[in-house]
Amino acid sequence: MSFNSYTFGIFLATVLLLYQKLGHRAQNAMLLAASYLFYGCWDWRFLSLIWASTFLDYWLAQAIEVSQSLVRRRAYLTISIVANLGTLAFFKYYNFFSHELQALLEQIGFDFFVPRLDIILPVGISFYTFQTMSYTIDVYRGKMPAARNWIDFGLYVAYFPQLVAGPIERATRLLPQIASPRLPASRAFEEGLYCIVLGIFKKVFIADSMAMIANGIFASSTSELTGLEVLLGVYAFAFQIYCDFSGYSSIAQGVSKWFGIELMDNFQTPYFASNPSEFWQRWHISLSQWLRDYVYIPLGGNRAGKIRTYCNLMITMLLGGLWHGANWTYVVWGAYHGILLCLFHALSPTKGSPNRWPQSVWMQRLAMFMFFQSVCLGWLIFRAKSLEQVIAMLSSLASPWCLTALSQSMIGMLLFYVAPLLLFERWSGGSSQSPRLLQKHWSVRAVIYAVAVHLVLFFAAPTSSQFIYFQF
Image 1 (cartoon, helix red, strand yellow):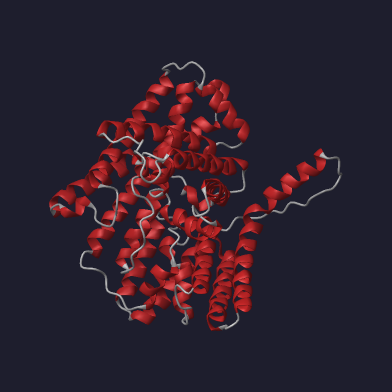
Image 2 (cartoon, rainbow, N blue to C red; image 1 turned 90 degrees about the horizontal axis):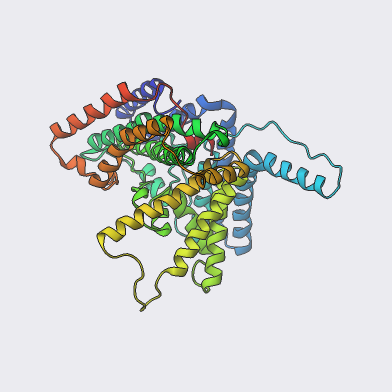
């Protein structure tokens, strides 16, 4: 049941109608049942995984809270982390590591068969696994009390607007909203409608259209492509993945606003960042903050000297890359961004030294443009099917460029679909917390929404593609 389907529209309308007629406790029970129905439409068999994760962390967190023994508290936390990461590793990485182990054994002369399994990756497992882990860790750290109502905690884990592709919410933020009676804010409908229209526009009009270009380029033989065609294909994927993922997050925020629950911003105009540190404060913010708080800082952060800081950055980004999937391209992508962050920290001015970063408006814009190119280089690594394809496409970029009929049509499509988005984001600021458009008269909003709907209905791609982050 995808957000951009008519089925979801009917499902949402039904849930909202029931929601308005129920009291707080009944609302939570109904939302939990609706969330399980929503997830069961993908594959009902994997509901057992969500239930197991929910029950386990629900009881372990209570055991951590009441235990007076530090050893027992650590043991309970270890059980939670091992169980969650073990489940994630089995479904997501077993075949990858078994294949690599098989290849390694063959290289050193051992004739040993490592079995491979026909495993289906459960939708959203990376998101709700990290969400439940953060809960038990926060209870262990004393940042919040353990939940005592199973329905409230179950809804925190399975809340359908953000279940399958985030944002990865913290229990300290989401659980109090679930546990307390809530009334939609005075402008909840307007804010929710804005987020939903923006999200559908990004996904259907831009992301699906860019997918046609990117999929065609990355499926073609590199020998048949010019350097310019490869570059334009990478640009197309850059805006496909951004509009696809941020579009999902925006719809999730809008739907949640109609239930009186606020979800965090997951994107804030990341392609206007001028350095890697700023980019990761704007891109997939919930994952960036999760890795910062539960990996980077526990490793020591930047408190133990430069060399240790660089090591911590590399470990964090390697794990961030591996979180996205079982392929060496994701690992290399994570390492690439780790190197960018290390270089940025190495070149950043120390306290009391002169600032070496651009100060004028034009220099800042140049820095944005140049850094966007480095981000796109990372997207080439991320999107490629293998490291061999990465090398081949990089070689094509170094070959002579020529303006072909294909590249001309690609340039036209990029300008038609992407330029309006960039202009709008530059004007609006990109945050859903205080969108500039909502400050305008309702008639102005109505015209803009009508234009957006017109473009979605008449200029969208002929085929819809699945949300990219469903596979993660």
